[in-house]
Length: 143
Image 1 (cartoon, rainbow, N blue to C red):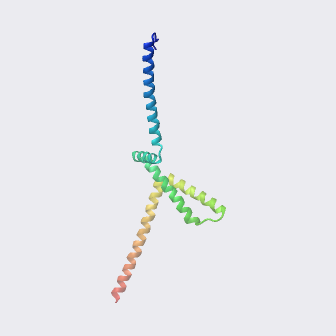
Image 2 (tube, helix red, strand yellow):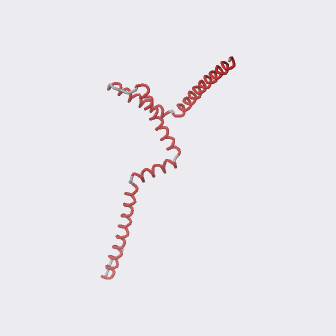
Image 3 (tube, one colour):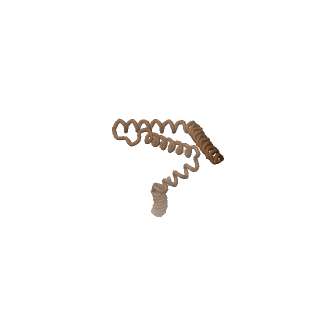
């Protein structure tokens, strides 16, 4: 740093520092304003959606988590129905948490087994409908 030897140099240095201070103040004010805008819920949601679009792993993790939660909730409702006692409520929560945990950890296995079950179910429905059609055809031919 230079030593200031006269009043003219001191005035110039003060003016320079005041300008520098004003520029830095404006930059900080703008940065704070941008930060406050980024904290608005709409902008947070946009940022989240943008990051999900960029990361396929995150998409997969969120999807598996949602499937796990949904599976746990549905299983809880199917197995325990509307719960009345405190023991049943605790049992329901533990069951839901356990099934959610399993569904999140092993989504591909559950998906494969679910598809196999659905395929078997639809195949059995098709066989039944084919046999019903055959019975209708046989009864119509007897007329």
